[in-house]
Image (cartoon, rainbow, N blue to C red; front, top):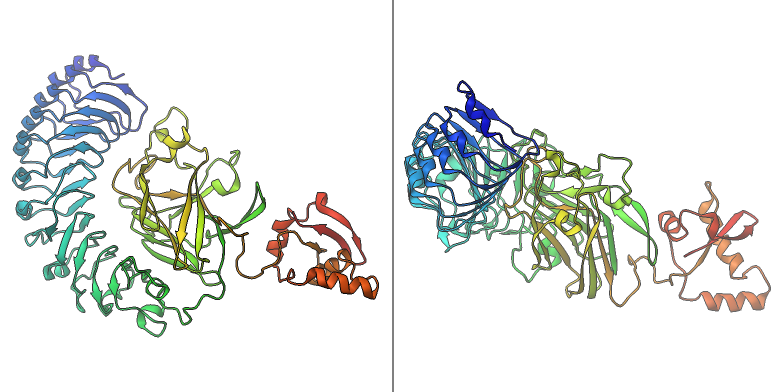
Length: 593
């Protein structure tokens, strides 16, 4: 509980109770104090924001982020004429922003992300001429973005995303020459990107993803400081310009209509200092072809067609015992990921595309795109101890599946939050799930679904149709949820493992058409493959007489194939002694489960 008795401390100037586990409400008695700062960041405080806070005219800093406050913003806060920072993000606030807030003319930092406000973005923000940072991610407010926003000449960070409302052209930002971060994501913006955007010299991040933008990216830019260019999910066209090839840049052109990039083009040559994502950069439409989706490939034909896929997202390859036996989950943990990452397993034509930068975190090298469970004593299965994460969007795909119906199993466990009574348990992760471009879950929360953190939960979707050998599963962060628990930059989609199985055929990666029950022989050593062959011959009786050999050859016809050591280990539980069926001249013989 927050003590009202603090009012008896007349010389107290700051109340900073951030990063705790406090509950209760804000005492109205605090309104009689001469405070300059109130920080209640990350707690369990609830109720309405008391109107008495509007009496603290000495207040310069007020942050209530990541609590459970509800109701409307009291218009009395408009009396805080000295207020420079007002942060109300990640609460349950409703209603319209009161017009009285127009009087906050000393405001430099205003954030209302992740709330349930209604109405349009108010025109009165033009009064905040000193404003340097404006954030409205999934605030509940609707567009359009008011044209008078251009009057905010001192803005350095403008971040607006996931707003509903009518389609609008690119907002007028001509006076914002000092912009460093510009995010206008999923704002229903159409038309072309204005030429002056490419001349903002201090711009380090430009994110206009998931809009309806058209046109071309210019061949010349005056953006020497640009580190992040996120153009994902538009209808931009033309050639990929050479102007994007700046060392240290992260450029995401995925889901657009650019000219297809072949292996001989500069974009496909590789540059260790440039992260470039071209996945589906030449097809944002639904009539997807393999050529449109996968850039830089010399051979666009599938080497084989699979009927299943098992991925341990963000981790190494693991063998998991499930109902039908041991399953090999391919790992992608060797891929660090990044703000513009495209990974393709060239052997089996599956991979992932990841978009976005974890903003405000302390990882300037952008290497934290997979996470591991900190507690080694956890009872979680291996496939839940690691996960792949993304700040905006991540798509897992398979481009060489046999056509037919499939069952998709998505495995999750919230491994970045805790279950104790500390602030690290107060995180809230929310994202959307799409399968084959159709929304499967809106505002999905792993912890809510599992009833606690660090507990597995599986979401299944049956009868998923694959008609062009292509499957895509996308996870999208729509601006909701906390962003700084347990640390800054913890948010966005998290996926532990993915399982895709045919509804009509046995699991096959296309290498073999053999049955699922075979007998193999094996010993540890350099001649392992020889022993496998001998084991098969011994068990089938091929070392007996001529008649027996003929009969067994007929029995094996159509059932033989090539198997990797990895497949053999998975099929008999890593050569478990329980699966041993005999001894051969060269070692033990095992059966396949």
